[in-house]
Amino acid sequence: MMEKEQIYNVLTERGYDGKSANVIIPELQVLTPPLDTYFEQWVSNESNTHDYVSSGYSIKKLMEERGMTYPAALLTMDWLIKEPEAAMGSLNRGVR
Image (cartoon, rainbow, N blue to C red):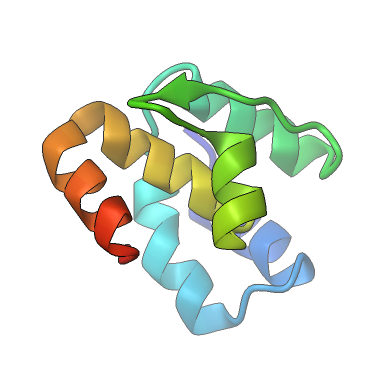
């Protein structure tokens, strides 16, 4: 698991404010495989992004159509994997 401070530094360097970074760090530290590996690779190199599909959504689609950052799309995909019904309902309503 990546250290909180390392994740915080990367997120704030890439546009997150400190409060938002602190809110999502615990969730990013427990992403479902392979999303955890995708996040670690993105931390090492911002252009290193992978796509993944679950419940009819993809990371790329979430970023393009919902305006999500890569970490936000990973967290949403993780939610789709862990709680597909709740996540789908929220996404269909346009809420996360």
